[in-house]
Amino acid sequence: MITIVGQPDKHPQFCDKIARRNFLKIGALGFGGLTLPQLLAAEAQAGARSSHKSVIMIYLVGGPPHQDMFDIKTEAPREIAGPFRPIRTNVPGIDICEHMPRLARMMDKFVPIRSIVGAQSDHTAYQCYSGRVPAKNTATGDFPQLGSAVAKLQGPVHADVPPFVSLCYTCTHGPYNEPGPGFLGISQSPFRPMGPIRDDMVLKGVSVERLNDRKALLAGMDNWRRDVDASGTAKGMDAFTTQALRLLTSSKLAEALDLSREDPRTVARYGTGDPTVFMDGNGAPRVPQSMLLARRLVEAGARIVTLNYSKWDWHSNTFRRAKEDNLAFDQAITALVDDLHQRGLDKDVTVLAWGEFGRTPMINKQAGRDHWPRVSCALLAGGGMKTGQVIGATDRLGGEAVKRPVTFPEVFATLYHNLGIDVDTATVTDLNGRLQYLVDGGAKPIKELV
Image (cartoon, rainbow, N blue to C red):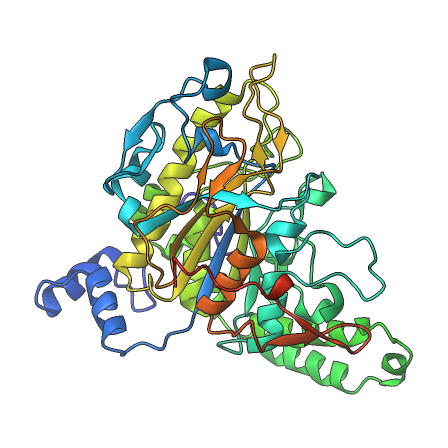
């Protein structure tokens, strides 16, 4: 059984019995003192490694408080400002919450957006994953989430690594979960290794020859039932069968998901969390190592990796939870982005972290902040973007965007642009056979970033 999230081996080995730690030393000695990350970065810059564009999307479940993270309001009244103080970052003029010190030291590699507008008012992940407000009329099917659209348009980088992998845990509150492939059908669903399918990735004593016999048996089955399935479900299941057989006979994806192959020092840098503890009961677990898995997956060939992280819906005791979550998130997100830079992936991998809306300026009687769809925040990194800046601003109370409001479609247009997809021309086909553009309203990539 592979180790996905857990305590890694102290001295992982390659097949020739050379310990990974020794291999790193050999690599440093053999290449003029270069460390392995430096060597990988040099190879990437020289074009020696095959490259593809990817997105890691981190959904902060429940709506994080923008004014307690990236938009501290020191001049507001106490009942609005809260107890957190700002700290300077390594980019002059950008201050953030005192409980994000690592991020402050690396702000030149990030872009906080303080002025996301146009959020819907309900607790639902749909807008974060698709860029669109949930449709009331779904006669043509829901619009697919980003990963499904990209999988349809670009396909896999490698045959044995799915283009779209979801590391999201299933929340008991349904709207917190990913919306799925919508009208693109089940064949464009994400591969989900965090659930029961994890056990299916191991042959468990079944020989490859026996597996091949089963493949031949499946190939010889009658096709008549597919003709009566107008929904495309059978076709989608056939795609899953094909994909599953590829995964079972290839180690590439399994290796990417096996954290025991990672340097233990790198694993420790991200922090740890318990995948069995769902925050506040119906949120997601707070598992920083999901971000490390995401990095390993994009290295292996995944185009889109999604993950959900903790729960930020605090109607009471906001500041105790905010301090706790800010510190853990600060450690994990900076480890991820630093990793990408060390490995020469910062131009190819876009990182986005955000939630479905912001929080109220006014602190309620339970020392919490309630839902506030009028303005929220996001954090971006990588993707070859112009980092080391802040985009947008809110008013003195943190309740309205007063400078450079940014919409969800603009963010998605930027993601597609970073993936090499032209939102002015690229389309997907809905259930009625009509071509649909990828973003609403003719949105363009954020000009400050690209």
